[in-house]
Length: 165
Image 1 (tube, rainbow, N blue to C red):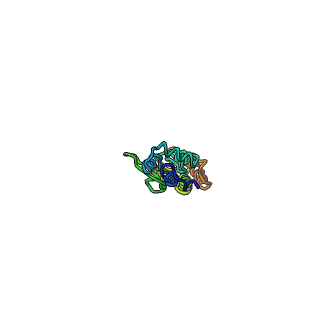
Image 2 (image 1 turned 90 degrees about the vertical axis):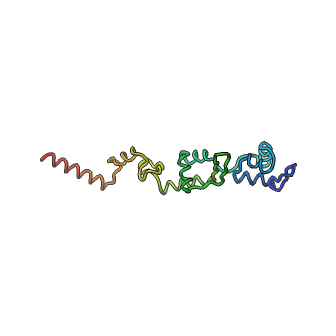
Image 3 (image 1 turned 135 degrees about the vertical axis):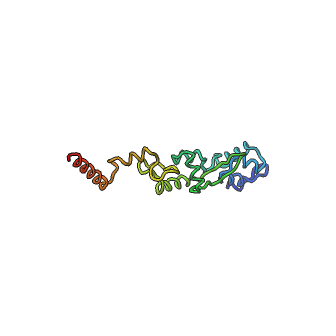
């Protein structure tokens, strides 16, 4: 098995593979084992056939979920979604997400916070509609329930009767 083999200079490959599968960047792996980032890349390419991991970057998560980055950050800050791993480099925090996070996001928006007109996710400061345009659109006759339409038609009849008199 790949994880049981040793690298020439005594580094256990299972550590490298395990860290990469958990989403650690190659730089971090290189620092831990005392080798260069390029050497880590070579070991990963030879052993796994690729240097990628299964986790998603925030940008990739945005593309897959169809949400802007600020909406992903809002969900993270509200603790609706949690990253698979997180690390800091300087003054920036980096987050990696599991593929299941996309399903979590879609389930959250399907059950809770969708605009009643366009079905787009609602911003934090909105309750029923994502924009004033959608709110105005919803009040159009074509979106009314049959009961609301009857009430509107009754109001129109009363108005016309008053004008005749």
